[in-house]
Structures are given as structure tokens and as C-alpha cells.
Length: 437
Image (cartoon, rainbow, N blue to C red; front, side):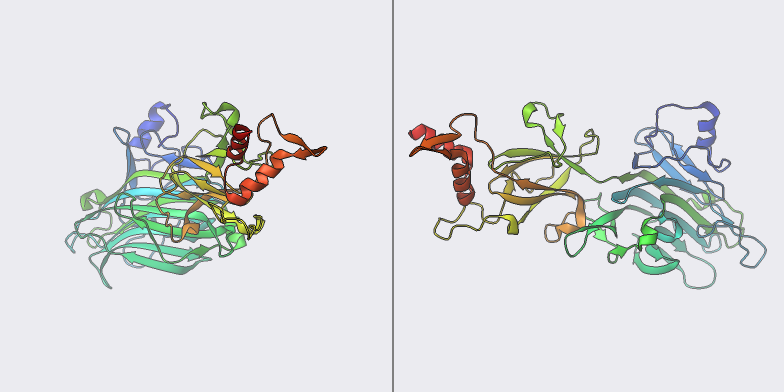
């Protein structure tokens, strides 16, 4: 986890040896995060049965192991009957903020088949919660191989809203005892009218290195009250043993190994400053002061709010055709009808993309999550958007006006109008005029 590079003696040693004996040993931090477990962790650690350890070598992993008797659903002890009590499991919690984000984790589950006389239930759970577990998206690797009732071996995604299960989807593991999954939750999805809705959420899973993502169920819509609650990611689990309820999960040889957990914020679209065309670090905000003009080529950049990180994304441009000038019916068809501008190499995933403006009007620049982008339904994967209005610009510093029949004529306006009609760059037309006169 990329939290910092400072190690504080016994505190880290205690963490590496298990972590279950400490509560709130690291300060919680809000905002977005990206942890790959190569450095010490910064999570709230809530006491309970179970243990974890960090492998800080190489790529870095977090191992979570369950201990019987424990359960992941409650924060207090419960007595279901019989000779023992079920305890809350060890919980690792991490708060984050924002109303437009993408959560993703990669987990390897070891859940070997065990003789029924040894183990009853094992569970490893990853949560994305709003307020508490009564409003949550839960990814649970579960197996029950002994005891009364139906036995199962499954991967289950459950959506709970206001304390009631609203959706539940089950996947069938490989049966080998070891399965690798990636899970993703996206908050902030376009609605049917094309407006970004920060109450709408989608959940996805992948088993092929994130090349193909499949959506769990249907879109999830939070109530206004739930959408305003604090958000956190949590890892926990549970286990019950048929014969000896106090047996350790180490003997069961079961664990969840997390490669990374991250929450990325919305991608911010900026533009390379044309005054510094040879310096890609010079970026400008796309705001009211950003005035693109007909014929301009813009280099857009998918970055964070500080302009430091770069995100590889898919790019699309949606033209508001109602803002375009109605074509002259007597003029030849324009080269790029109903399109304010076009991307170069539009189908490739990239953190930067060149955009050529060919008509006047409004256009919405969208960036899409490359992992879940579907060209047939691009609204489901939008990470950020910016709307720009293209205006007529000044074409150079000379011959902007001419004298004609005793009057001053705005030559640049005439050329811009002709260029807009034809979809031809105005600077090309003016250059051609100057060449021929």
C-alpha cells in the first residue's frame, strides 16, 4: 500500500505479525487512494477474530485469514445456540470521499476442498459501504461443506439498500480451490437524458486480468439520503468449524490475498497550453476562459485535478447539433457533417488525444474507463466530461480586414463562415487566398 516510506519500529512489527491486537493504530485518511501493498498500510483496524499480514517484498500483498468461530455480518458477539459464541471478525476499514469514483481490487482466493468432518463455513468479504453495511455492495467468496442445510461453493455479489437485499448474483468458482477475481464499483453514471448521475452505481467483475468486465445485475440507484453518507471500503471474513470451533483457518489453508485496492477519483480533462506546445506539462483548465476557435487543434489530457497523474482512457466527442449553423442547402455537403470536431486515432486508449475542430458549435468531450468501455453503450463508463463552445477566431495578425468598395470588410469572419459551411480549416482557406492574390 502506498502510504508513505517511513517505518516506525514496533508498530510496523506488530502489524506484520498479525494486526489483530491493535485498534485504530493508523490514522484514517479521506480522499482517493491506490494501494498495492508494497509499503505499510494506513487503514482502521477493528479488533476481532482473524488475522492478516503484509508481504512488503516484490509486488506486495495483503493476506487475510479467518479464524473460527467468527462471522462478517455483525459487530457484536452473537450466540446462535450450542456451546460457543460467534465473534465479530477482524475488520480493515478505509474511508474515502467524493461522489464520482471507481473502486477496484484484485484478490486471489484459496478455498481448498476440505473433508466435511473438519470445516463448516468459510467466508472472505470485500465491502463498499455507505454509512454502514445496511447500504453496501458486498463481494463474498463463500464455501459451506459440512453441517445442516444446503452446501455451497460460490462467489456472490450482494447489493443491500436500507437493510434489504435488492440484488444478488452468484458466480461459480473454478473448483480447483484457487480463484482470481477483480472487482470494480463505479459511482457516477449517465442517466437516460445524458446527465451524469452521482447517485447511480454499477458493479463489475473480471477473471481475465481485467480485459473483460461483466456487470453484476443492473444499475444501482442510491437514495439522496444514502448518497450523502460517509463511504468506506472494508475487508473481513468469517469461519465456523464442525468439530472444533476454535480451530485456526491456517489449518484450513484458506486465505484471501489482495494484490491491490484502489479508489480513483474523477478524471479531469485539461488541454495542453498552446503557448507551450513543446512542453506537455503546461496545461490549462477548460473553463469559461477557455475559448477554442474554428480550425484549432487541441491536445486534451486526461489527468487529475492537480495535472500530475495521467490516465489511459477512451475518448469520445458528442456534438450538440442544435448549436450548429444550418447548412446552406445550395452548398456542397460539408466534409464532417453534424460534427464540431474529430479525434485523431480515436479508437486507441491514451492519456492524451488530439482533437481537430472543423465546425462551429458545442461539443462534449468525454473520457471513459478503458476496462469497461463499450462503444455500443459508452454512457456506462464515463469518468469525466467537459463541454466546449467553438467560436470564430482571428486568423493571424495581417489581412484581418480589407477595403472593398470604400468599406472595411471583416475578411476573417467571411472566411470563418465559409470554412464552417464546408468543414474546411479557415487558416487553409486564408492561406490559399493569400497564395493566389
